[in-house]
Image (cartoon, rainbow, N blue to C red):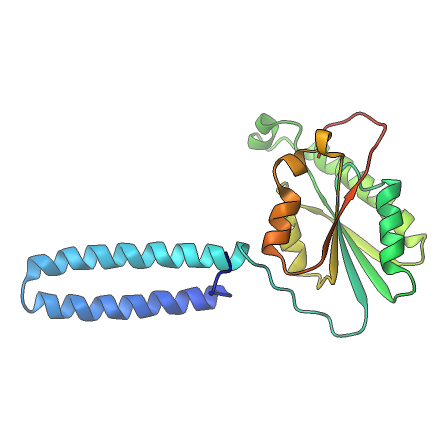
Length: 216
């Protein structure tokens, strides 16, 4: 569902409006029946806090708007973990950027091997492996004559995408995964969620690696 509140500022304004309305009701009620005024105050404060919280979260995560760079450069955001060096992905990047003044940003979410590792914050190895794969992919992308940079993203791929869009005004997004039968990202609906939240062209690239590893 499209959220009518586009920013935290909009959400805050609604909270102020609700607060002023609550204050006026409380003052009027206290002048008549104090006990009823206390009940009204508790109900309205609770409603205002709940509404503001939901609105702020929705404005940040339901729909992500991107401001274009305006300099004529085509910007491609690539999101991949284990498949970041896949030939299929590199070929898609080549085709998307062909005959364009292009810039590529590669985001590699670092995933822990298990939920226990994640909660224990024992993800140093996962981050290092993701960084190594990312650096090697950047070498190949730059070998195509493209300007490219990369970063390690949040372990939640959708959060990593949203974080990247706040600093990189992408025109299109490529999300690379293992085939459906081995992809955690597809199992968790990463591509579908991105298409629901982000108003940009999003292409899903399937990379079938021969190496055995933790699907992502």
